[in-house]
Image (cartoon, rainbow, N blue to C red; front, top):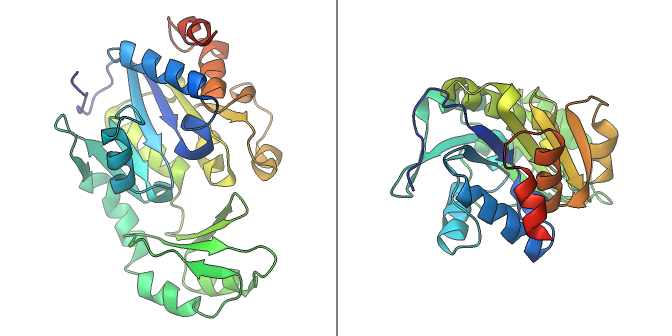
Length: 262
């Protein structure tokens, strides 16, 4: 299997999917069916992970055979844009990350200092390059955090009612996905974005086809507009992705995913 790492569209259907609760969600049978379908159709399917996870986690999970390998990774809630090489190494695409780094402006230490004593936040220990992330307790959270981050010129994103991310202004999953699609020359009309929590909202309204899989968190469903290109799926996780591919008729063999799961 060879991955497409060119900067021109090759006519393939592109699946841009969140991981936890989405591509990793649903029954084992539904996941196996979707993953097998992707591998069987690699010549006509491009796979992009768009996730809060970091590339190291993704590389390890794929190496263990839990996930099929993607060709590109938008990680760290949109602050990392990376390519997966044929040898399975993962490297940031510097041309696409330059603006992200500029907007972040080495703000990590300022964020950690400013939010150090804010109630309801516990710093995540993973070293991020262009974001700072916290475990979030909504019952104890002090909203002054929004003012502190705003004064730094940065953005706050809360998702799944348990995570808070401080991000460069205007940077999240959706803008980074559009930046990558433009770099690849991939039209939004051949792309499906899939997610289940509020940090997926920006990519589900970015202009591609989109699906909020079954079991998505209520704040995401409430925030999603009613548009014909956005599906609120019944199927959980991977089954919801398969449902959307068939619903929008995005691939000639889309029906094979659903039939294979029966």
